[in-house]
Image (cartoon, rainbow, N blue to C red; front, side):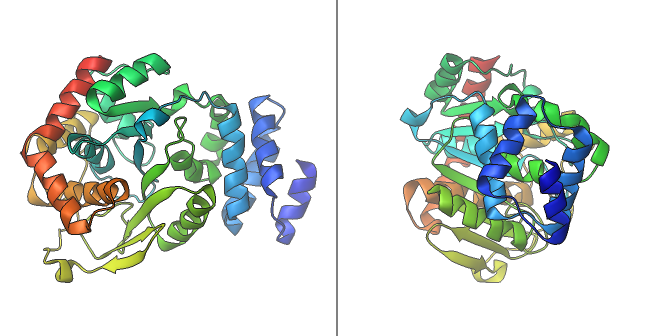
Length: 330
């Protein structure tokens, strides 16, 4: 670690293998907290490279508790967080819309760090009990088309980094790793990011991993398709900026996607959308995020996928998927 710290201030970078070794040492408790904090701060100030990101990922994948859900060929739908917008749980809502459309989802999530309610908060608020039991996760995805993997049950190395991350109080590489260390290693991903720099980083990383994916960001800084502004989509096949005007959509107002002030409020907003009681901005945001996830899986046009998402939501199939998921996991 000392050699790395001497190199980083001079513009040096970690190789893939060096980044991986940092995580392996962390898992074994061999890392000095002060040195780790210095390394995280230096990389954060300079900006992480793709090799560093994938090396850290490899270390976490080697040390995590993995599960095999490959028979279902699921997708993960996740946002990086950190956009400061405190939106309701759009990605998690979209998981059930995709499930209602007939596709499988293996979502990894955690408690909220920069928002009132992260995915794990709203899932737990429904009475769901988190599990790392592969047979239980298989039962969940088999019966409801959704398996939920609570991050803290699968990544022991992250626990050793927690005191350092808390002491630093700033975003670090670990914030970027969350979306790409799903223990089920799904081949498909719908990823929301907060800015174009992150979009390019993840695009290069996911291409190297050979995944099928869509990365989305709203031009005004939401880590999802918020419809509060035009939005950009980068996939393994194309790159496009979508204009709300060209799509015939009204611009949603700032704050129309608020996640509330408590987890209970967040749960009510979440349920309202799936029960077709949501506002137009809430419902349309979920439909559009779901549609781009469905395009990854189906290969259909975005217009067809929007129609699929609308049908899943408005027919009650998305809500039925949620109810079955809660039933199986409570």
